[in-house]
Length: 154
Image 1 (cartoon, rainbow, N blue to C red):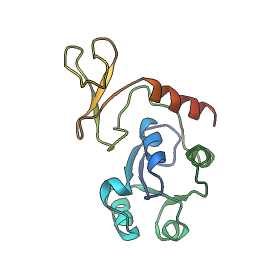
Image 2: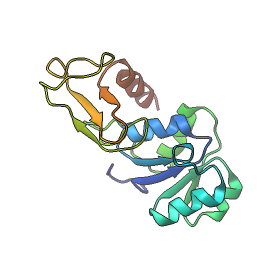
Image 3: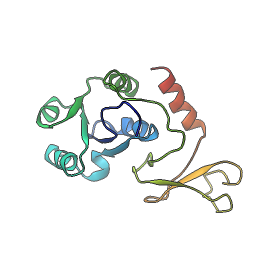
Image 4: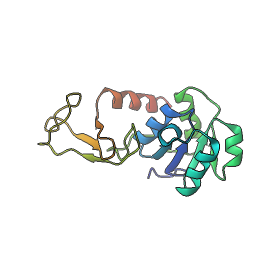
């Protein structure tokens, strides 16, 4: 868990999909409403209660109904990240990914001799991780650098 943060288990409403990816890359266990077929407020609140997750939303009515929530007011992801930093969230890239940026599943390092998909580098040339749920492969490439630059600018 990132240290000194309000919670490491989050659930984000349907308006915050891009933010979910950033938070996953920062090491947060981040459920996202549209990944979980939870577009309705009641469904999202049920996930928060069942899985002990903090609700992050741009919907003031939803925030008021959640026992614990963070209400964001900004639309741009960079501004949302600033709001979270101001609320005490530690926002820096995890040294190694723990959660899939696509589905939030756990990731594991790919063995250097294991094959990788055509879109990914060879695991013997570069460290590569694979999501155990959806199979997506990750490495510290240009997207990683772009996220790092965004976080550095907060």
